[in-house]
Length: 415
Image 1 (cartoon, one colour):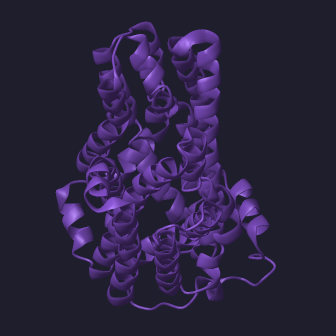
Image 2: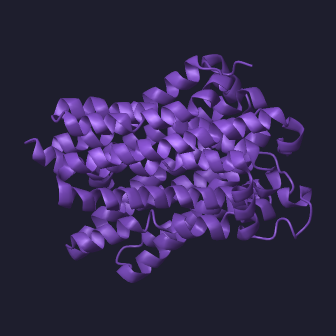
């Protein structure tokens, strides 16, 4: 059944509960981006240290590695609407404390870490709830809308964040961040109907007993393994973002070009996701996951061979556009996981994806010091292609196996 196109987007927004989840997600994303800018400015104003500033900024990202496996299962154990609301209100309180003028820096770091830790169960609950809210034929489009909104708000947030921090100061900006979390919680409280905890639909504590149970499901299901392998290719595809500054310097450009290079992939991704969802039916998108995942690494190879700022902007935007397959892979992954284990499995998968991207950036930077920026881009492209081919073949085999024995492989649907 064809689910692409603006008609599917409209049908997704016609569902009141989806509008509430979407609005809450947009508010959280906008608040988080503003908070990150404010925290970076605040840390540098307090210490004058680039290292401390980087540490405080990292505290907005690193907790996802811990929170995913440890706290993602809360989205199965407790009602998901309630978990989103509680986490939102708790994060609002924590960031409100961060906004208190003169708060000691170590206390600030602890509060920021705790706030980001609570993001993992909230995001797991939101992702796990979406398939229960949207009809199956518009689910993929709904996920695409959420992703597009997240990317656009992130891009606008960094641009507008600096202006807002300059206008209202770090205290005012962090207060707005806290207000955004509170607003998101209230939107979900009013707009999403209560549902019982998903765990009640399971087969007993032996099967659903914690992170290891989620890991066992992830390892045992060929489709989930294949989709996660395709998603983790982002570890290669993210390398250009880490190398934007040295690349710009190498081609004789300044900070303006650094910003343009860093924006190229997100902008390309927004365009790619829209076109991929608009013109390709769901079945076609699932078939193209493997080829697109492999193709996304090719522009990195070309970028290494064809230097220059214009070529880099176009090629890196193409990496982002081809990376549109990630949205479909994410949506299909969530759909396949049984509803009573979505929180567990999504927590593990999200942490794996964050780790892959972090490692990719670090290794890319180390390679650039040894073989130059162009060499690092070339290695990332070649390695991504080499890893992508077996991942694509594994996904193709898993789909074929699922189609041959649908009754044995169909995942239970909750809601």
